[in-house]
Length: 144
Image (cartoon, rainbow, N blue to C red; front, top):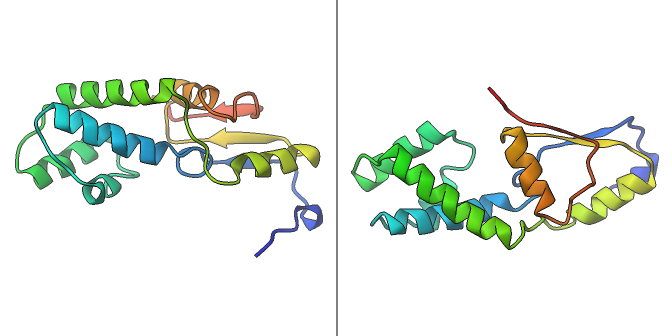
């Protein structure tokens, strides 16, 4: 199905970020597998996919239950964060057609923004490390 953007009437477009514009879920899964391996635990893609959308405590609880051990939250998150940062320095991949869609919206003069469950600074860092740097007028994240 082809979407005819010219026939649509919008004032702006608001995007989610992870898994929609940026392929951070795959990168996060790979980083998690590496981090857990560094702590002596072996997990597969299936358990990692089951963590998508969960917050940190819920994800650690699921991993602990799966592995039959109580994971140290500090050590696990530290190892995972380090593995993720290492991968992000190489650049964050975009999802298929994300840049083309944003180019088309820009050509139509539609402002766009990101609203994400990631922390704002983390979202900005991921965007800057991707091919989408400088493309959003507003980025709003989940900050406590």
